[in-house]
Image (cartoon, rainbow, N blue to C red; front, side, top):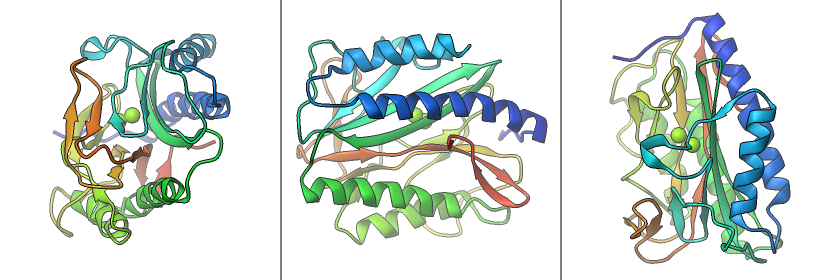
Length: 249
Ligand code: MG
Ligand code: MG
């Protein structure tokens, strides 16, 4: 069952989403050589509470932190640590969500630490642009696989690959709602998109093969071939005028 949100509910989700965007901006600015992923997580949690919200991921299925921070070949669900120090040339995925007034917002981006190799920059640019092309498909009358199809077609054009094991999702009063949104698949398939759906679209794109595995910590997903991976996500409302990205400021 896919829940449809009213305009009023979407405006409440916008408030949660703007808090997410603001804190992601601040974390992105802090992601410099010498900073630990644990520091970024601590900052985000404190800022979230200061802005009147709660971190959405802390304790979710037992996740121990407020932000999923995934460096280089880590795909998603990396656990922040004061021992994990960012260094020049790293790429760092920051995946963050909050609950505000009972509504969730969820967004992610992968940022450069200092100066990075051109190949890494290309992966970041293609993943971000793939997300934007997926979002452009968010019109009533299209179908859910149109989103993933647009993403897959674009990023595979660069020789990159789409992670299969993790997908985007509906979002609202719960972090993960129906429908699932794969970042790959056939055009014109899946459930019809409707005005009032709010979707967290989140391509995870690998420079090498699409296979991932989870480390012994039970959370951190890494690429099997150790190639770099990037992750971008927005919470998007489907309106009568088309997609509105809620996690943008
Ligand atoms: Mg997320
Ligand atoms: Mg998500």
